[in-house]
Image (cartoon, rainbow, N blue to C red; front, side, top):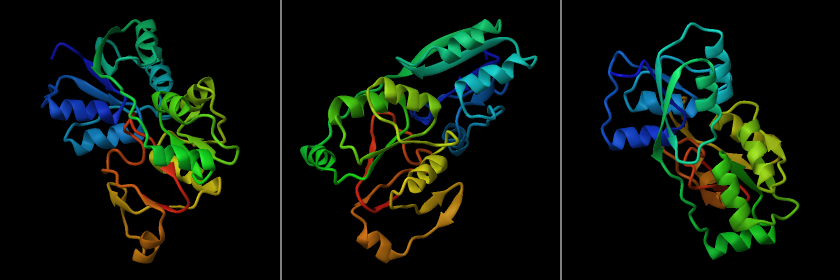
Length: 239
C-alpha cells in the first residue's frame, strides 16, 4: 500500500502479476494504458480506475497533467521500455518508481515462414509493438514490396519505420479491433471469430476449413498482445 497509483501498460504485465499472484491493495488505484491492457486487468479480477482516452502513455501523461492526481506511482514495464511514461509523470511532479516486470525475447521464425515471406505468399504482417517491429526487421527483412505492414498505432509505426520497415497502414485506435479493421481496409482477407468480452460471433465452418492459417488467441491477448511473437497473414486467416 505504499503507492497511490500503479500504471499498467501491457497485458503481458498482467500475466506476470497473475503468475506471481500479486494482490493490489484497495488503497492503490490502477491505471491501464491500452484497451487490451484494461480488458486483461478486468479478466484477471483487477479493477481499472483510469484509462486515457487515446490509449497511450502520452495520453495518460497529458490527462494527468490537467488533473489533481498526486502521490507515489509505480510503473512496472518491460526492461527496455521507452521512458515516455516514467519521465512524463516525473515531469508532473509525481514520485515515480519504475520496475522491470519482464523482458522481451525474440522467437526465431521457422524456415517455412521465412520462405513464405520472401516469396510474397504472406499477404500482411500485423505489428503491435516496437520490439515486435525490430524482430520482424531483424528476421524477415527485406520484405517483398507487396507485403502489407499494419501497425497498431503511431508510436508503433514510428518504431517500425526506425527499424527499417515500410509502414502501409496505421490503426486509428490502439486496439486489436482497430488493427484488424485497418488490415481489412488494406485488402487483407482476414476473418475474426470473437469469443471474448466484446461478444461472440461464430464463423461458418466452411470459412475456417478454407483458411490458409488459423490463429488462436486468448481473449485478453486479442490479436497481438504478446510482444515476443508476431502474427503473419497468408491469404485468408481465421482469428
